[in-house]
Length: 329
Ligand code: TYM
Image 1 (cartoon, rainbow, N blue to C red):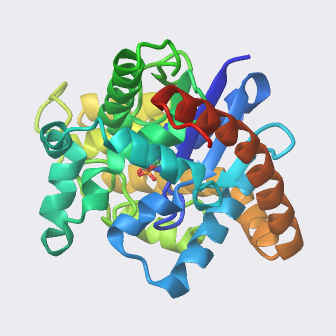
Image 2: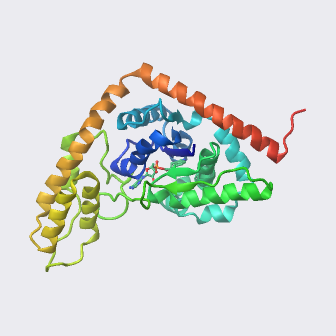
């Protein structure tokens, strides 16, 4: 059976981008693949979360994973920092990761621009840690959104390089994956770019309906089509793109048609979009509340995940140490 690995950073509640870019695929994949889904708390340290917040953030994302439908009976669900083998593999891979290529990655350059006072080495080697996450379980498929494409390319590079340097055919080379389609990008509500956690342009799975309505009604649009069949501007296309994932196809068609005929009213579009988002998130939001209050269940899930993930990771570390030439006395 093919192995699948993917993770999400616990730097905020899960938003629609996380759901449609990643979690939706997790749900399908757990039915037919050997899946490892984790919470990337080592990765979240690159932005220096306060110690008082870290555990709560992890707990929230774990509750959200489960509420969205990840099934600990089917998939291995674990916390990245419960698997120190990942840190060891990162150290080993770091020896063959080069400063130039790390500095050139888009995500590093972006982060360095966003947090100029905190350009730490963890940010630089972020793709190496991510590669370790993936290849430690010998994954062949990695369900992610479009924004992770370059990181996946780095993973492939590091895995191939290890195989080449040590003249082995050891690590599986993983592929980015989205069911039957190319990788997707869910846009934000602020007119440009992707939906994100930090940018304040996102809608969260746990968000209350009133707050969703407010955000959607405030979403950036434009002054409206000036003549029939005019091209759709980016902010309006972004709302259509979100509608594509939460609304019925005929609803989207109707609004696109209204746009083409210049009869569209953005107020109506936003109202409908907000209600469809609320219909989609409401059942998940309720489940998040129930699960988040069940300490014993969360503890059980995390423990089971840790044990299963450890089994797979410790085998890889044992074999990698042997390939590299470490020998016990
Ligand atoms: P993160 O935490 O930023 O996002 C988690 C997942 O959600 C997807 N995603 C999106 N997809 C579509 N549209 C969006 N607007 C959007 N925003 C987020 C991301 O593509 C991702 O799949 N580096 C990763 C976490 C990670 C990881 C891994 C992923 C660490 N190790 C190993 C896969 C395998 C990250 O920061 O994702």
